[in-house]
Length: 347
Image (cartoon, rainbow, N blue to C red; front, top):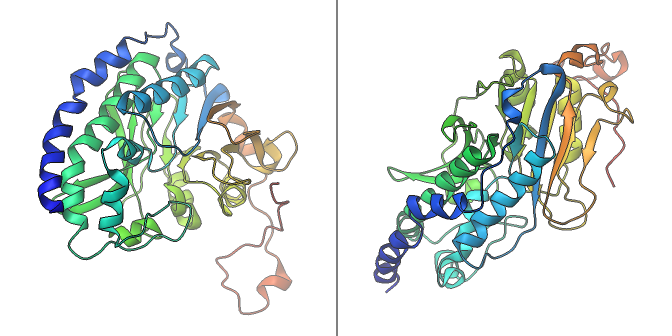
């Protein structure tokens, strides 16, 4: 029965949000007269991290309108680079008729959540659902962010979306330039959590995206658990790292460590779920006002765009490495690890 329903759903969604409809709706909201990305100076790159409140959208216009509003808020604050949360391309799923029943069927009666244990889909049910929804979700993701980037004349690190390509799921972030064209993309390196449950195929390539404000690295969510991602991007010249995440857990504190040990800025976008999840902008300890690694941190759980100035020229002045800790290394620890002390936890 569900396969027949999915066929009808595919047909209906193919008319719901076409590229022309998406562009016309967003263009009706107006184009900014700002040209933030045209004035690029490494000592004054202004970045923004977006925080979204998890919710169901009324329709695709509600979704596209929120993306436009938050990007505009960041641009009005001077942002040249705006980062959105991971899986933002899945959010329009809540506009699909009967989406909860469809997911319960796919997961055997369970309705999954990104911030909790993620079940595996029932054998044979992921493929028809992914194939049925891919066109709708793809067009909303690509054309919403492309049009918004063009109208706001800004670099958009468009969180991520799940792409269904030749029977494979790929968690991919697309970076759009001020002209609305893709400037580059980055795929998830390590599939854990929801990615593992859904069978997302991990990538073996990580490299920065070349932009007018300098190379921008993208580390998707839990890929930040692996220090190699930041180190590779830094070796390739990236000093500004976008981290589209989900929210919660240790990631904000971990990103302060990553920023400090590599001498980079980290722009962390997430969903405000629970009391601790906040988007933030992090830097080496000596490059932040309170010497705690925090440049800026969202002050509440509301949807917002957090903007702050970064100074890529002064990163080399920050202390990014210390002397090896002899007592720590005297035991049987791996010598590739460096103890850097305990950072105060974010409250």
